[in-house]
Length: 304
Image (cartoon, one colour):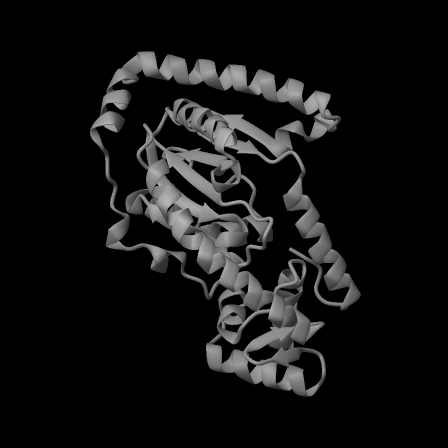
């Protein structure tokens, strides 16, 4: 039981980075050891009795329990209000050529959005057409600036159907992969979860496939089919590679002008045939470092 209580605290510490308390069911889902929900309830009762964990209603936290619980409720209400728009926007994105899957990601997918939160999307594309797909979507994104809706369509991460396994495998990417909310493309996300089942080594109690429903079946309108026909065959593959090369050149120049360290380029920005990742602030490293600092402060097992 002592080891399980350590794991419960570790789970709460990870979410403490985001000032986000958890309910018992969530602690069970995100605990890094295989266990059952009744045992989690027992561990939490002992931790609360010992003063190591604070409980406010159904919420548990390692600090400022009441304030963080109120903050969580506020974020949940805001997230619910944003969710309808996110689903509508995902449906719109799904009609662009070569889009095969759309999922809500970021803080909204955890129901933890605040007033400054963007609506983030993770997109799966057809094989060998990621960069054509991304270009269509980012041209549209430029238009959203004209009407002040750029924060409703944040599309910074793309994978194609042949390159679905995440290259970065750690606690952060495992959590991000299982917490997405698929909106379109059931078959694509079923393959994504299968190819990233390594995440179960971090979260053995979570089953992201439960989010897949028949309503996620692919829909392809006439315009989408027509544009995909134009970019079929070797011609489309050549265009796709040309766009990728020009994008990498532009990213390198932009990265340099903004003062980032060039040795971080390959880590923060990735532009392969089947992956487009543009995260120049190294957010992943910041989160993992903050988590390790909390573990050291609580004298727990070092971060994985």
